[in-house]
Image 1 (cartoon, one colour):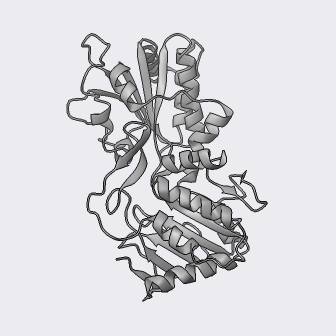
Image 2 (image 1 turned 90 degrees about the vertical axis):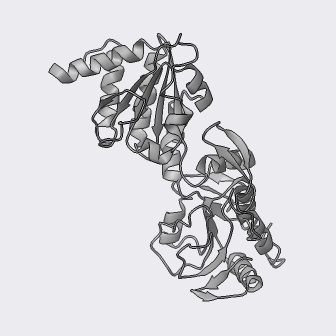
Image 3 (image 1 turned 120 degrees about the horizontal axis):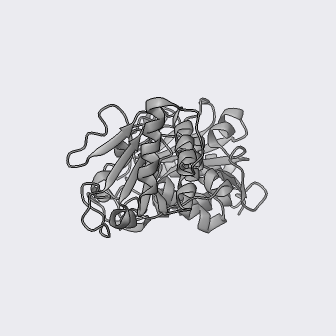
Amino acid sequence: MSNATLDGAPIALEDAYQRAAQILGSAKFPVVAGLGTDAAGARAAILLAERLRGAYDHLACDDVFADLDVTRSFGMFVTTPNEARVRCDVVLLVGPGLPERWPALFERLALDQPAYFNNGAPRKVLWLGPKRNEAKVEGVEIETLAATPQTLPGLLGALRARVGGRPISLEGAAAKKIDALAATLKAARFGGVVWSAAAIDGLAVEALQGLVTELNATTRFTGVPIGARSGASGVVQVSGWMTGFPPRTGFGRGYPEHDPWRFDARRLVDSGEADAALWISAYDGEAPAWTRDDVPMITLAPRGASVSLGLYIEVGRPGETHDAVELAQETSSFVLRRAKAPSDTPSVAEAIVEISARFSEEVPC
């Protein structure tokens, strides 16, 4: 059974649903934010935002747009982890903390094994900008080049220049190292670059895609992006097929409009443009980033979430307390994850259905 609180005090679940409906139904411009949920929860949340003529945003949108903005303005080479595992004889890792963001990285890409089409020769693994001691992986020989997130764009630009045979301003040992890395990348039969936009900025993402583009003039090279946290990749897909846009989309004029600045949930709440918020973080109970605490807020989060203000309704964790359809990093496709510990705690989708059923007739639809 789900728990609910109001400003930290227990409240009956039925009363919590009714109060949530009153808060959202009386708002002039509510925002449905967080969206840390599975496909069903994302669909329910977007439909709710549409019904309320509000907006919706995902908590990891800054990371999402580091990749998406490059795709929209420049283009992007990507493939699935499975194809990279089978084909890539050279793998370039870019940025720190990649195993933290995808714990199965080395196992899934089988970096300790040869590529299937490489006649048994070991893969060559390069890593630009790892954390200290992060590149020490049992069974995998990794060639590293130190860099910070701030210097990565310049380093990638230098690599691109040398791949294309153009001069760079570096000299001595640094230039020799860049030339050696460029030669390794150019010699790949099928290369792949792995990165996480949570670890590097949009400029670095654009720089590495420029490098991949340069390499594709003479060989085959592609990318394996690591998706952002809290189900962001799946939510982006759901948003795309429902509205034609990614999150940070609003329905204030009765149809979907996408604007990464206008519909940034943090800006909407802190500026006072949004007069109510539904915050969804079903995976780990991450708190919202806005600073105002005087905007009426409903939080849907799992047990253990630290919620002391506003209305809190406990929901289950996708794939743990209830079956969930999510976009899997391992396959780049939607998969069904069976519940590990099934319970009767409502899912995000079920909680939103209960709230929506209690709206008055005056709510726009």
